[in-house]
Picture (cartoon, one colour):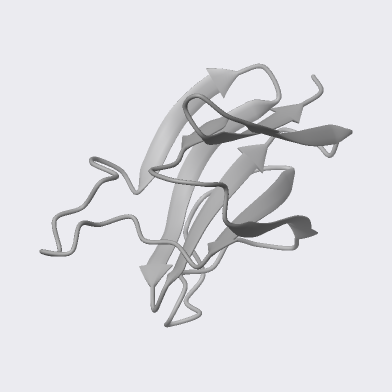
Length: 110
């Protein structure tokens, strides 16, 4: 999965979670999988200064990429953007920061 960034790579974390929840409310997101990987970026926004979303569609996107079943927008709240990966099963993953353009790449093994 690639997260395109407008500007330098911000602070981020990528971790296993028991379920995906909506940032802000903490409400569970109704999506089924065998494992969940949560990506959190901050400070970050998935909207313009005028409030227009820069992440359109969703919040649940069907990925159908082997182990990666869905990509979920878990939030864009108070300078924190959350993205969840719904996987068939836990597997090794790596994270890479790329430039020109700036982006964050999460590579999950099949």
